[in-house]
Image (cartoon, rainbow, N blue to C red; front, side):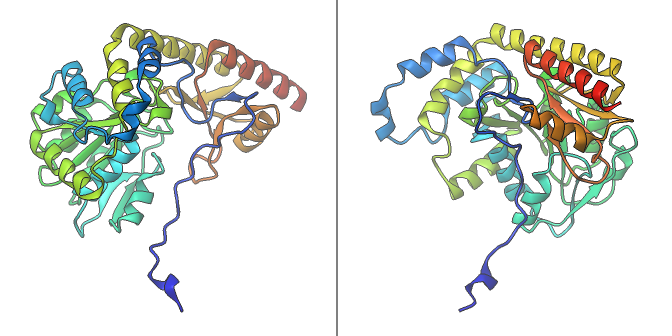
Length: 353
């Protein structure tokens, strides 16, 4: 029996390591170093276990309405999913259904090619320039759709809204997805463009700036028509994607705007201070607008630094991939965690001289 010949095989996405030891400094998966808004914890305590025997609201009504109010759009323009990965995967499945290849950068979120392979979507990667910026003209040729992370990951580089709009305007016959997972840390959102372009989908997440990676909440905003297509795919795949707890707690996360801005500003401040400290040690890096720094050093190879950090219970992210194999992505933790990282690097570099 050769049943394996009918198996759909794919090279899976490899997430950042989740160490079992809790006594580590974890700067490898871009999680928020601070707890969610106080209302989130309160809502979790008040959640009745009896509700778990019932199916959740398939339309995610309260959370969708909360997001619509916050972002000043119609509720029919909002789609909610199990983290932005779920939203993006459904968007790939829904909108990238052409024999013409979709486009995305060669250095970007490494789930894009996995979804393309999984769903048998042809794709072409477009090379970023030497500053890891998009070459806009590369996206103005015939394609089956485009996805751009902005700010990009793992580079942290932010493209201007003007450049994004040019790409959207010149591609009216395909869907353009802008993945804004990190936009709250210094970027300008392309959300206003959804009122001008029916084929534009903006995707964001609660995992980073709203400190809720463990609850898996993501969302998309676009035209009513594009959201309706996405909803149709969801209800053809799994009607109850969002669990009741996430829906209830997610509403509380959206409500507390003051706390949201407080922790975002703390992370931005720590990021900029860490940049200055790393520069003193001879590191170079992009001007990241994410909650991470994409750093390299001319005298110390990234892989050696990665391994040395790990031995000393500090986890950062390293990829053995072309163009980025001498860079580390360092998530922004608390001031105390970043001080510990800087202290270790100073000591390590002194010993290795």
